[in-house]
Every structure is written in C-alpha cells, then in structure tokens.
Image (cartoon, rainbow, N blue to C red; front, side, top):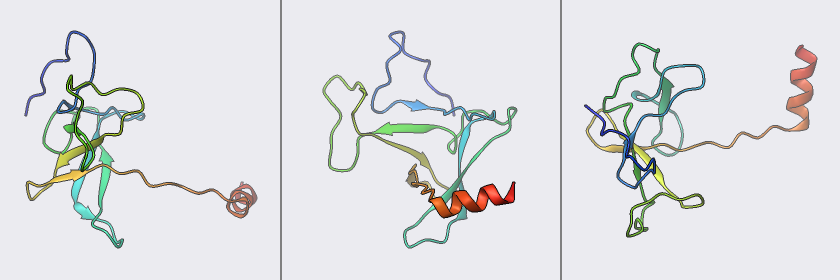
Amino acid sequence: MTLAPAPADGFVRYGDRLMLSAALGGVLALDSSNRGEQLQEVYSVTRTSEEAGVACVRTAWTVTPPEGASAPEDGLLRVGHKFCLSAVGGDGEPLYLQSTPTRCTISTMAARRSEE
C-alpha cells in the first residue's frame, strides 16, 4: 500500500489516509488477531518497530466523519470537528480507533506511591 503524498497546503481532509507516529518510535498499528474481552468487539492497537513502520492496511488510518455525519463541502478537517480513524481488519472490514478513558482515583494513587 502506498500513501498519497502530503498535500501542498498541509491540511488534513476527510478521506485522507495517514500513519500515526508512536511516541516511543514506530507507528500505530491495528492488531486484529488480538481480540479483547469486552461487551463490544474490540481489538488491540500496538506500535511497530522503527523498521516495520511502513504503510500497510493495518498502519494506514483513514479519516472519516462519524456515523450519521457528513464531511464539509471542502473536505477539510478542522479543530473541534468530530472524526473517526479506521484501518482495515483481517477480514477486510474497517475497524475504528477508540480511546478508553482512564480513571485515576486517590486510592490507586496511594497504592502506587506505597509501591515506590
């Protein structure tokens, strides 16, 4: 898979395919072989090594509007606009990136401090 070159104007548009750099190196990759155990269908996301950070179906994320919404006429993704990122799973169907909120309570903070 090859990605289109970055647009000259530098803007991200709905429908663009992009790769997401991981803070520790490599790129964000869908791992559709590792299904999570939750009520809804979930799969792992991992990061590649630096060498394996190449464009492929599991590392190329497509910017799409959320279900029921449409992209603006000019197609530009703007600050504050809702959007989804999807990659192709092992069965050829799109899977969407979703964040999971992490809650840190006083008791877990205290437990972490006592371990130090």
